[in-house]
Structure formats: structure tokens, C-alpha cells
Image 1 (cartoon, rainbow, N blue to C red):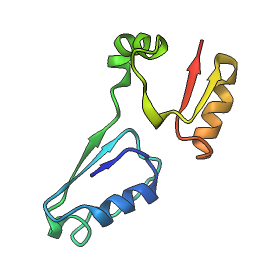
Image 2: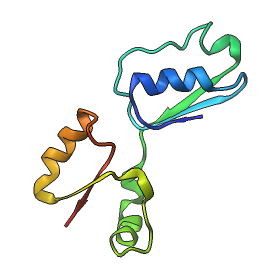
Image 3: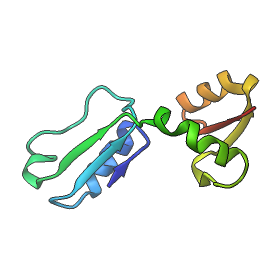
Length: 106
């Protein structure tokens, strides 16, 4: 099970649907301070919790040109496209969950 949204609701959903003996992988930085990881929610079900910050900086120089020239389609991850001037609004929209991911074009 991959939890890549970062909200507490997404984490709770992952805990609710992961099978006994399964793994929840969190990609990115959680946007919550506390979540159940104790005996009842994960430990007795033998569920593994893994994850960390997404290493986007390691891949951006290699992948961004292929996205910009149309070779690679990033799919439905980006739901809004804006220019560099729209970057502050894009971050506000992601923080308020109005947008999932904003693509900034030159």
C-alpha cells in the first residue's frame, strides 16, 4: 500500500486497507504530527511502515527535460499548470488541498 498524499486521512485509509503482513510505504513528508502506529493498529497485524522524503532533487535534471519536451507524460499527477509567476498561488492551492500537484512551466 502506498500513501503518497501526506494527509492524516490518507494514512488512516492506508492503515485500514493494508493486509496483515503488508507494508505501508509513505512517500513524501506527512502533513500531520501524530498517527497510530502502536500495538492495535500495526504491530499485532505485522504491518511494516516505511518511507521518507521523496528524493526529487536527485532526478529532476534528468527527467524534467523529457517532461517539458513531451517525451514523458507525467500522467494525472499534475492537476494544474501555471507559469513561474503563478508559483505562490500554486503552493497555496496545494497547501489548502485545492490542487494535488501544480506543474510550473517556464
